[in-house]
Length: 217
Image 1: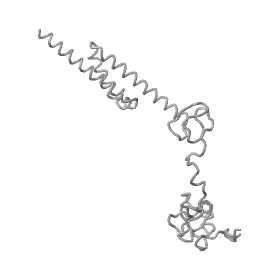
Image 2: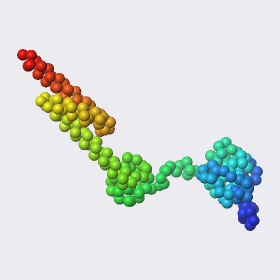
Image 3: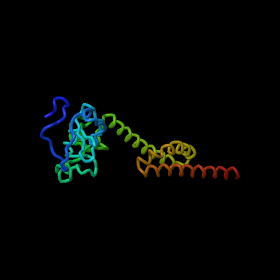
Image 4: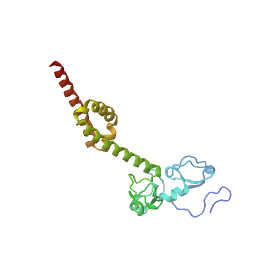
């Protein structure tokens, strides 16, 4: 029951392990204020709360009941491991609940799924994604594929000796600013890009030496 005047809980209440009485009632009537250590929410003066009889820490009444005691570490009123429900340790942990919605087809799938079993969409993360997130992933993949194909084309063109001076400039201008993208596409493409630069510069140097030698003769 609750007192009709102050609305404090009276009558049959649980007794803490220490046997000391728990102060219960509205925070304002008890002169208590602060933040509940369990839910980390400021206590309203009109909310029903209780104070730990051992450490006097303020708790929401529902939070105390849910935990089974004081939330202060090391407090004598804190629930022992044996008092905690067995499913608390065995239940799967998920920050998003048991299910999430697939951003492509909208079907509910397990929260830990990395692939939708309805539409086959793959995800990079178990966190819920939006359609915009998937579009960014597609654009990123397309950029990497385009970069890989471009560097292969540059490498092939750099093998043509007469194009060496032009390819040396093109390779330097295109490859150097995109080193990070090529690295994400794979180390093979990054090495291929540097090789294109070296070959183009080498051919250009040989063409320059050949031209100087021809003019000397």
